Length: 501
Image 1: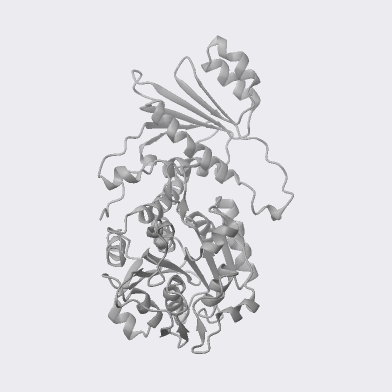
Image 2: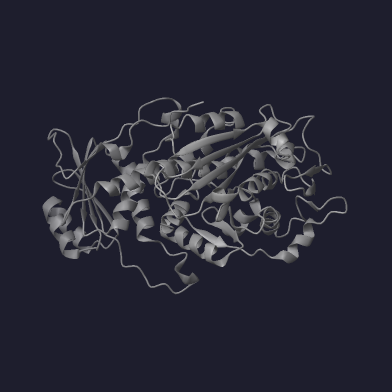
């Protein structure tokens, strides 16, 4: 189990306001024209281009221009003018942060091809969101699972970062580093193989993250889950070699605040065979990612601790492995939840909602100063949501319009999109059972909705949102320089938390 992620971040190697030192090494030049200044583009072309390149450069209208000039390879980025929003209230528009993140992240592969040891980056006429996005994108792109897993150093160029017309603030660099690190923590956890990551080692990973005193780690093992009457959570994990856990990270800032706690609950099925209703091999192939919600919650906790977030937060992670064994739960078993509901098991592959249900009940029943104002759960819950929204857009189910609007807006700003889906109560009839209060799955139609309706039964009228995510990138794109875990929806939740302060 690789507990150590990576050493110093890529951004730690940045030299602010300095010029490259070693004149013997090839230097790569990157210019980010935040306002798309045509005159500046012309002057840069004249400075770097060979004479025979000038005519082509003058005609070039692309957003990213690359050429090998008199001093070395040159990249000039000049964002195009954004079109006016005409649909979807702008919630699917690409933000300045997102476009800068992805175009700078995509450059990382270029630097490897050119074997650049020194890189000079200049921001010209850029805004804060563009700078934050660019820096975050480079740090996200620097993550390499194989090198970390094998304990090999990641070779990175020395970077000299300059901002024209003012200094780039160190705080911008720090914010980008905290964001990117949290995204990469989530990606790394999802990428770990299931023979390394199980409920027990996930807890060990969290304990080794060196959280500050403001973050208290509480672990409930199977005995404590039994004492708490968390029959749904226990049922899912009873067939596995490593039993279930609930991990609770309780963050309370050192300074007093009027903010009430936000509780995040993550689904942590470290591998999902489907149980006795076993998945076909093609559907089981990526089921190490079924703890993507838990990875996102732990990663968000890391960001909160890193920036010393001024508001109280609770991070609950429901951990179990859904295995095939003589002790595994069976279709038609009746299990009793922590809130007293009796649930008939209709499908053992609808297990994520079971572990979430009991842990949601723990979150919403906290008292006094620990009572949450908002509860948000994150889960790779249904294949139905992927069919409807694809890989890149999370399904958002919410019982409060203001909270839903805040999360959708945060997702757009972060380039980490979600789309609100209906909590259509008529479909709850699909979950009826003649033997218990309800079943754990319906007929298959509207599967993402019925799963959300099931979870809603365990939130006790609290303001609540459920993000149904995919957590996986099929191929490299933008800042995600390799396929695998994508860190969804960490950036959206960071934006949401920042909007509260």
